[in-house]
Structure formats: structure tokens, C-alpha cells
Image (cartoon, rainbow, N blue to C red):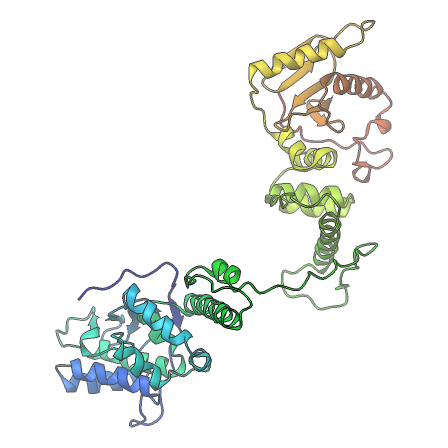
Length: 471
């Protein structure tokens, strides 16, 4: 018996173990399709006694949680031994061609989709698809139960118990049957939606052609929703006017008086909510701007980039301490990253942390540009080159070339290099500014607090920093 390999589009579903049933004569299936499942099981059985014991096992709660996937249902079943057996029933899956026929017939009538969503399988639908050569309901040859127990019965009582329990699941959810046949609920509903859209579009084209509004359009492929929408040639109403941009972001929720769940920090949630509102306001302002058309969406940030962004956006000691304790980096590394982010965002953070080798020809052109633009009355400092970094000999000043084609100024504080300002495409401009900054840093200690980190220093207190990565 050939079985289709389970589709990655149709993940399995796991159902919790059903409780034992009261009474020994209650039917396992009330629905007609559940009874058909049991009929297929009982007609394929070679031993009615094992079926009887399987019913007893199922009613007594011996079947554990059932995992249903395309082509199979599996569950642990408690037997006479301490460890449960692994029972399984394989189900013949429909071919792709059979699925196309079935989906077409379901999509023909909206009542079919409504019935499925309401937990019903219309008997008329099953008859129609069976006449079209699609066996929606399994027959005796479509089921193949087996088990890890040593019993050679077909089926053994453990596999029979599983099959009876699956009948109870089918009663509750008809999509279990469709999943066993090869397709999951989400995959089915998405495909039915596409076919329904194509059908409506094709009907619109046919109506418009009959009325003389437009010439008849070529037939639309059901698998191409865009072609269906285009072929319908229905004139769409104009888009509504864009919303008015608020003057400022909205205020986040106040959670201080609420009783938090264990492990939840209300103050941190308030900060994240306010930060999300601010970012949404900025993104909306950019989207409504006159130069927004054709621009690419923002690149998602990594966890470390977002930590630096958050610390830069909320420069308080409390926020910095929270982020430093949870991001897996030292306070010195976070302070340097925060400063880099403030000067140039993700590109500046990359320059801080990555040393790379630009093409030699590019660096030669940059040196020539620096020499041409440097004032004639001022000696050009000697530069020591390592990869993308130019360090001024004898000075605590450095230029770093970024992958974005800009030069970033750095100054040295102790043994660590710190971002010192925004980038520029002209190395002469950056070198002039960084030399000026380096000279002004020879002031008293309180005036040398790194820019943007005043919240981390107090008058009269000297704070030490762990050196950031440097060369």
C-alpha cells in the first residue's frame, strides 16, 4: 500500500488523553463519519475478541495522548506490563490529484466550508467525492494498525483501543479525518480561500462579458490568485486619505498598581511599552513623509543592537543597569555600544566591534583625498594603519572606516577606544574634529565624562570602565 510522505505544510496535532467513559455500552462515535471509521476497522479485523478488549481499554482510559499526523495516528497504550506499548494506525493518504478534486468540490458550495467549520462533514459531499473517485472516508483496505506489543493479532487490543479513541476524536473534529488523509486544517482553509477567490473572480468576468461591459477574459488558473484579481477587471475605489500624524507618541500603560505575575517587572514593561510607542510614531512619520515611496523597510535589529538602541534612547542609570544585567555584556561594553549607537546607529555599532580589511585601492584613494584636503599650513599627522583603522601616532586619536563608506572618529580613554562623534565621508574632516576632541580631553577629570554618559557619573566619583574591544 503506497503512502504519501507526510507534508511539512501539515504539522501533526496532539490531543490530550480522553477521560474514561461511563457505562460499558456507550457508542464510541455519534457522527456518521465516526461510525464509518469504526466500520472500516471492524471489517478489517481478524479477531472480534481483540476488538472487544480494545473497546474495554479505550473506555477505561488506557490510551494516552494521541498524535495525529498526515497518514498516521500514534499513542501510548497501557497494557499488562508497567511500560505502555506504542500503538499506531496508518491511513492511506490521498494523492495530490485526489486532493485537487476534493478541494474543488468543497469550494463549489459555501455551505460545505461552513459545515466543516461547524464540525460537520456533509453526507452529500462525501457521496459526490466518492463518485468522483476520491475516497474521503477510509475503507477496510485504507487502515493498517500495528503495535509494539508481542501480540500478532490484527489488530491487537492496544491498536484497536487507539482506533476506537480516534473515532471519538473524529466526532469532535472532522479535520482530524482530513489530516489523516494528508492535509491540515490551516493548509486546507488557505487553499479553499484561494479557490473561492478565483471562482468569484471568474464569475465576475463571465457576468461582465455577458453584460457587454468588457470582453471575455481568458480562463483563470485557480492556483494564481493575482491573475484572478487582475482578470476580474473590477475598478477599485480610491484609497482613503492617510491618517493624521499625532504630535507625540501616546502614553504607555501604568502598571505600578497592578499585581504582577511571578517574574514580571512592571517598570520594565512600562519602559518597553513607551519605547514601542515612540518607535511606532517615528516609523509612521517616516511612512507619511514625502520621500517614503520606494524606500526599503527597516532591517530587524539583533538582540544586542536593540539593547544598545534602548540604552541610547533612555539614558538613565536605572535603564542602563537593567540592560547591563540582562544582555550578557559588561557595563563597559554596553556604555561603548550605547555611545556608538547614538552617533550612527547599527552602522556605528558595527564599526565599534568589527575590524575588517577594506580593498587596498580604496584606502589609497582615501589617503590621497586626505592629503589633498589637509591645510597646507598644518603638518599632516603620521598615521599607523591596521585594517580599517588609522591611528594618529603620538595622539589618542583614531579614524575607523565603515562598510557604509564613512569615517568614524575615536578617542582613547585609558586603554579603551571610544566613539567620539558622528561619521563623515571625508577623512580630513573627521581627522580635524577628532584631533580637536582629543586635545580638549586633556581637561580636568569631571569634564572628561564621555558624551551621553553623564547619567552614569556623579561629581566627585571616579568610575572605572572595562576596556572596549580595541587594537
